[in-house]
Amino acid sequence: MGPPLLFLHAAGGAGQWHEFHELLAGRFRVYAPDHPGFGGTDEFGEVEDMSDLVYHYLDVMDRLGLDRPHVVGGSFGGWLAAELAVAAPHAVESLTLLSPAGLRLPEHPIADLFLMTPQQLGAALFHDPAKAAGMFPAEPGIDDILAAYRDMSGLARFSWTPFLCNPKLERRLGRIVAPTRVVWPDDDRVVPIEHGHRYAGLIAGAELRVVADCGHAMYFERPAEFAAAVTEFLTELTGASR
Amino acid sequence: MKFVFFHLMPYPYLPDDFDTRYPSPSLTFPNRYFDRETGNRLYHRYLDELEHAERLGFDGIAVNEHHQTAYGLMPSPNIMAAALARRTSRAQIMVLGNAIGIRGNPLRVAEEIAMLDHLSNGRIVSGFVRGIGWEYFAHSINPTRSRDRFNEAHDLIIKAWTSDEMFQWISPNYEYRYVNLWPRPLQQPHPPIYIPGAGSTETMRFVAQRRYTYMSVYAPTRVVRRWFDGYRDSAAELGYEPDPEKIGLSIPIFVADTDAQAHREGRDQLMWLFHKGLKQGPELMNPPGYMSPSSMRGVLAAGMTPFPQLSYEDLLSGGYAVVGGPASVTARLRELRDELGFGQLIGLFAIGGLSHERTVRSMELFSTEVMSALRSDQPATTG
Image (cartoon, rainbow over all chains, first blue to last red; front, side):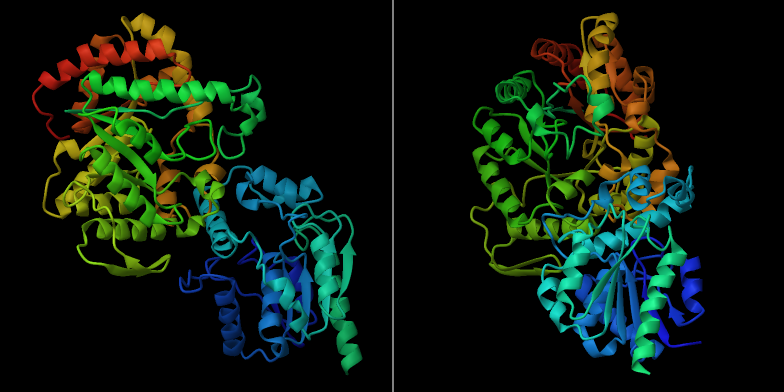
């Protein structure tokens, strides 16, 4: 069983129990819900923007009875994780941000996923092109296309403009009290690593760790390494606090 | 039958490596390819053609709105309508339409159309469109809110035109505490409304409920037939049969003196329109949330071939366009009218890089030979 861990998924990967989750589940009780409008979750039309999404997840945590879970989020989910820890600093035991979106750095813009073809998306997300090929079917059926369109629509709803960020987040990061680790793939072509330096610089005590030979798809491309990075951080913490 | 001369105002002078180098003439196609002098001449040429259409007896002259694209040079259709308003006197001036889905301030559209109605002495037709997918990138409007924004903006504009009392407007996307339109439009209760449809059943119902004019966009006859039938079905569910004039077929038309000449002169220009002007992947056409899941499923299931993959022969046999000498064009349009049951023909004559001289010749042949023949036919019977 282990302590509770709330995992907040990225733009892709809703509805999937992946090797990465399985590895974490060996040490933690992993909760991996789909965001509203993603994967198998309903639209919840009243959840219009990031602040609504934060309240939605505070409700989810209450409903699931999650008492101070470790919160881990990737990319879009990393942004959401940071927002949760800003809004409810004491509701979060620890915070692990995996290449989170959320900051607005005009000199280091996030790549426009919305404008990419599936081929371009695969090339942008993965360090190793062979792994990209496995993620995107060569000849997707109508249901595959509709599922991907639904997830992207979910993402657009929260992040079309301002583009994948909350301009106010940066000045609020000082509210975070949970021990925080920021993890970045070394070949991130979607969210530049400067965002990682900014997060690590503004959250008290946060450290930035880099995973080698990996693209923004992170735990899809290197599930073992990303699971290890999370586990190592959380083990250090629990070791220190107990 | 009612005849409309529609102008897209394309910028046809693309670089030689356009096909291999650029995904589309829209959104990101570099504006350094807009030559200032050439563009300047095009605007005046195109406005001349619209004015000439009135002299040739077209019932309407039409403009539309597009942003950041060589496909069409009218970011503000209302400015073009204003340029035409006092240079013409008889034809309806049709703005097909204002892209109210992407407007930050739709009340401005209500104001401008009301002004245009006065400048044109009551000849304005007001089309409303959502805006093409790429325009949601261009103007930073969230496409997941597109349909709501369109519906709210529409309702606000109609109320602003028709209300005799100041009101407040509060809806999810817009808040106005004081709506009190000066001027009110000249036409009562308001200018006629046209809405294009591309298969969405929501749009068919929306248009049928309000008895607006429903018009098609580029598509093969078999698909347009489904759209028009859907519109007629929506009207039937509401207990009425729409006047055929409220069903408009939009279609590129090129007429020359003979069939052979028309194909010789028209082929490359039609190919420009469908292979270059309309070159755009799904990413540009349907940004996330722009389409409802059911509409998206319908589009995918319809399996329409992307425009750049259609041959010239496909375009003609499929009914995407009509090209020929006057007799052939007349016969083909009669066929389409009988198949589709439209009572309004919205023709695009300045196709691709067609020269002014050939465009005018095509318009004149259409007017003197095709239009007159079709006007003398019995009224169309619906599908």
